[in-house]
Length: 354
Image (cartoon, rainbow, N blue to C red):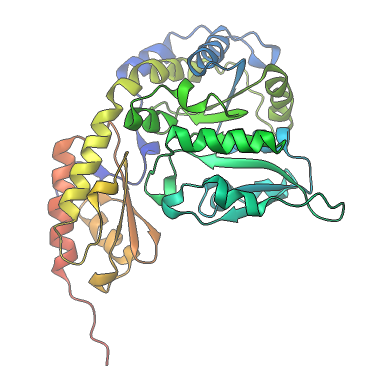
């Protein structure tokens, strides 16, 4: 076994709070947030709204809750929500869109996970009383399971413009919107200006230990505040977590480019390993997904062998592996991951088939 610590590339959710975050948490000024009296959470919500140029913001424990509150806020029960086939709200939120919001996802596959209005428009239901009606379009930027792909601003703006003309709302699952902003060289406010609501995570690439933000019009956020309590998300001295969120919001976006550089380095190295298929030029942010079909081994099999050498990652399909870079993995860690992957993937031949 390696004497080195693990290189954890399973997700950017595994980051540890920075010393600055821990200090801010220890010193946080707190109060009862259910009474609206926690000064640190109030400051975080105000600051997030300012950064995104939205009327109001609400801290929520998880991104899943933020997305669910947005769906409940814009889409009445029995209506449909158009999203990309591999969108997080469609695959990884325990069907809460149906079980709790009472809506139905209307998923559409899109090249590299990037929907266009031409793909969306045919999915909009005609105004017939016995049809489930389209109420909401949900985009994801970056698109997690498509390898962290990024919506060009012009494309998402075009979707919003057409949707609004059709009297539809548009929600952005912007869990990693700061990664998209860094990749495009634009502000998050610029990228999200035309969306009716936005959710982003403090606990992924930004590195806070917990929490996400939901942003939108003031009346929408007031309704979401009630919905948060309904879902059991009313918390008390949550300023302890909000303090870390403020540090994450202000400081981590400045260093996200390092994660992107490490992801490209990782992709370029993986592309040189026999049996691995990946186009490094398509790696735009901090998520790397590569195909291992030609190794004749499953992704889980390879991930299990990598884990024995303290390189942690996960499968995204039977023959696809996902690795996510973040600030707790430096270039030395990337190089270790590549060296180990080269050894592991080429070390054991698949069993012969007779």
